[in-house]
Image (cartoon, rainbow, N blue to C red; front, side, top):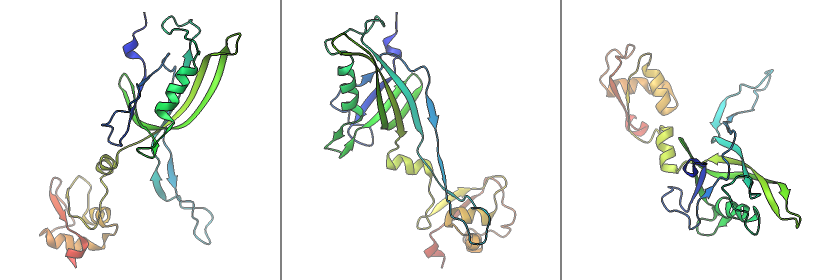
Length: 227
């Protein structure tokens, strides 16, 4: 007996915070994928300085993660848990496309998605879909198909900024010193330039800024307030 509660499911949402469910039922896999591929792509600058033999490969950014896998749709009756129906897997393909692919006018884009399979939780959007038809009835009705999918990770902007913990020279930051930290290094992380470390030392009353005690909290105010 197949446990339906363990099937991979895709839920649609009409807002980036994933709090407004789409008016379309979630998509449940007929058969769980045999495997999936999780990919990450790091973008480096390809610029090469004049007179050099190769590029420096300076870090640019990290692309959102992606998840690729195949969904098997089967209405031949072989699974024993999916009815044949009058339209074969066509109804399943239409359902999948409406949920993941179709343009939604209220948000001016395809829907936001949450993919759930056991401990796998993946907030994403569909990036690519190929449909491979595998079996047909005598009347040409598609009875089996494979949805070859690629989903790209999506993180709502507020949550993404919290995760990335981007530093801004226009905001006040407080950092706790860790083993190996130096004041010039911390200053460079906040302002993008280590030259302000003497001003930071003065503001924090550091008399021996060359040896920072782990656990010490250091305040980094906006650059404008330092001048």
